[in-house]
Length: 298
Length: 226
Image (cartoon, rainbow over all chains, first blue to last red; front, top):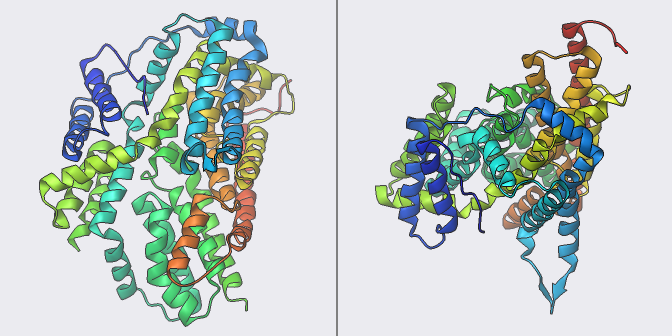
């Protein structure tokens, strides 16, 4: 994993922040864990105490861009659409290709590798077609990345937080609490608690995958399946989707909810969550009704 | 009980709108120390977890291409194309993207879409362009609302489409977990039972998109102008 994430913006803070981030990418594998930990903390301090700057200058005026859009017409869509199309082709093809029985690329990494290849091809098409100055892709990437700012690192930080929660056993503590406090003596109450619990726990952890084992071991299996004889397949499928309703409502799921606000240059970092909350709540209610009807239908 | 301190810090931090990076770091360190790890061990665990999740940053790889194309007027072109279709409205564009995204995700093509690759360069400008066509120049707040809706469509369609595909992470996680507990289920069965919720998600969100169109019309006034 090598990046050309070399940024040289005007401000000292940006240079330190992205510079340290680049080090964690280039050398992270070789450095001891403790050194990486301190590098991350240094990044956070730089970003949170003095803040990151963003250059004001637009690289081109709107009129210039419109003129350029006129000139290139629909050809502009070719590189943009090449990214998803090549990524999908890659994920399909790489599964088939194998050399001497061994897969050409690691199966778990297929999407990531395909996306990387697609990006390189799309960039090549773009450069050949538009013939920009050599520095243009890098300048433009810097403009976008500065607009995103520290939010670019947030998903990775949250993944790290999730790992620490797992090490510390946060999940077990929560499920013990839930079992002790909540009256669970009717099937409807149990199913409702399970679905809402999945959503709430997902909101806290930022990830339905972290919530599922805890809630299912704590409430789903002992009560819905064993005590009331529910169908484990239906319970698990709808339970997971109830967790996804939680994902729509939490800033902890940063790559879905916070990063897009930065990418789309929205002033309110909760704007996407606000749009999603009504759908998530109605859908969660729908899930509870569905599960009540389907899980005990035998 | 003390191990829950991290959750408390996260909730308080987000409510007070402190820089999330700082909140998350403090929450992580506090959780580690509360669970009895030494300070150095906590920092090491944090560093290790950060490094092993580096692949999350893959999305930023697409920025040079998108930046280059935007420089050449991609967004303006996306708006201009939409201007060519009289029938295109903000909610129809978002509805169409919702359907395509959910169906392709259900077929396992989850990488066909995404905020950096599709929403920022194409979907959001198209949705904005359609509204501009109908109502003329838009105020910033309306622009932002349309963009937020474009991002939400991508998320909701993805989440409630992908579980219909049998080889997706969440289905495999469910199967693995139930296997450990001595219950054996078929991935195809799990996928089938994701369909009712997927249909509900489609109906609920599409209704909301149609309401969005109505609200745009009442806020910005006027029936459709040629």
